[in-house]
Image 1 (cartoon, rainbow, N blue to C red):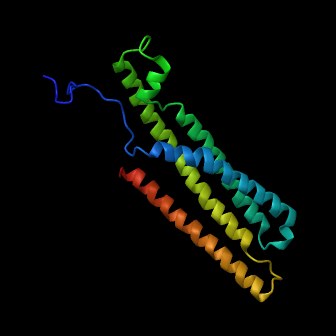
Image 2: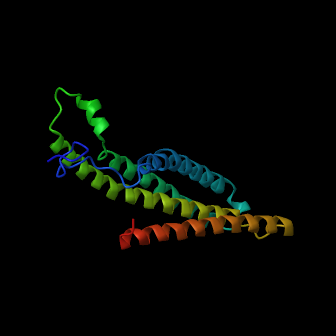
Image 3: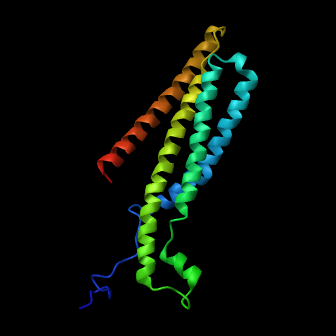
Length: 188
């Protein structure tokens, strides 16, 4: 007996992400934001190396920003590798049309396995991206600390800016830790 939708109740459906917009959001952060932030961090490294004598902790800032760049590049690569496993029913129609299309049961099995692999791989990319944002904030915090010979107002304003960067990095760090905890505990 068929169901009211016209589908056999035992028929496997196309896999759908838990959050429909997550694919587009993931691609935005990994293929747009991460490259731009990595480029900004590389530029900051260049500026720090050229004018490090004007900073309190230039070497620590360069280290944090180098880690940041590495995490963003890892995020891009990991997401690229993940994307190879992701396809939809519309992609199948575009690729095969109706003439040479393999059976839907086979395609759905591949799509289910691919989505599972995509989820696992993109999780690593997202974790690297989030940690990259934390280290970017840390690098900014270290670069903004005033040199020891700063005047009172220079020191005040630079410490304030450094503190804002530190609070932002800590907030992102806490958010990232919560995400990791929810992933380990199996929360959605």
